[in-house]
Length: 104
Image (cartoon, rainbow, N blue to C red; front, side, top):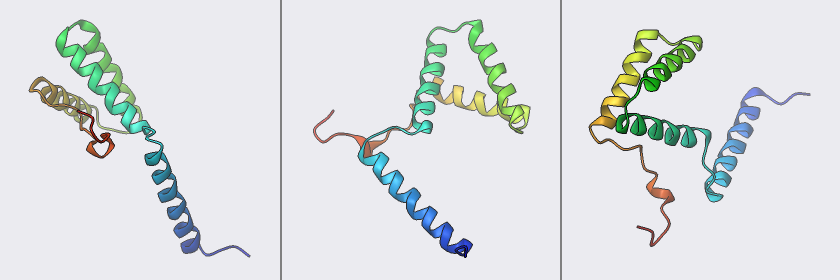
């Protein structure tokens, strides 16, 4: 006999919590952490040495977002907002809980 859905969901939620705690203990970056750093690197490098490649990268990025169902104009606006933030000196979100004790 199958377990009730609520029991399965509760078990899955507990497994997910345990997995996240394990990944945190291992200090293993998530896919989102890696993507955040990669985006930070791309935008800051493009602002430091502007070239035509960044514009084509933005266009390609928007096409990928559009293929996932996002609005084209909204995607361009979001990218422009991020670039403006970085141009104003904004840094990628730090993860202070990962700072090693005694590290700068």
